[in-house]
Image 1 (tube, one colour):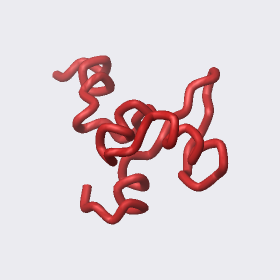
Image 2 (image 1 turned 90 degrees about the vertical axis):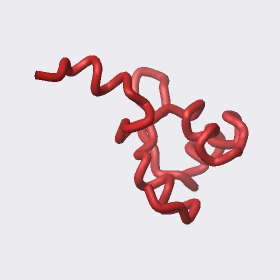
Image 3 (image 1 turned 135 degrees about the vertical axis):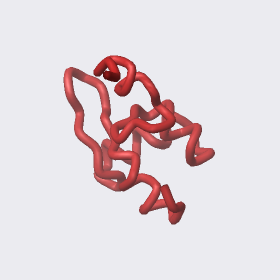
Length: 66
């Protein structure tokens, strides 16, 4: 039975990602992704001071099949 920690740490399959991973996936800078979150251009939630981004929404916005 898979460990919960293992599934949440596998960022290639993660449903929720941080700006650093979003930047790698999009080719944009981490700062650009963060600014998009702050401006509401990218649907994201800030939890305990860290941005969390829905990976499938990010892929939809940039026009890539997830």
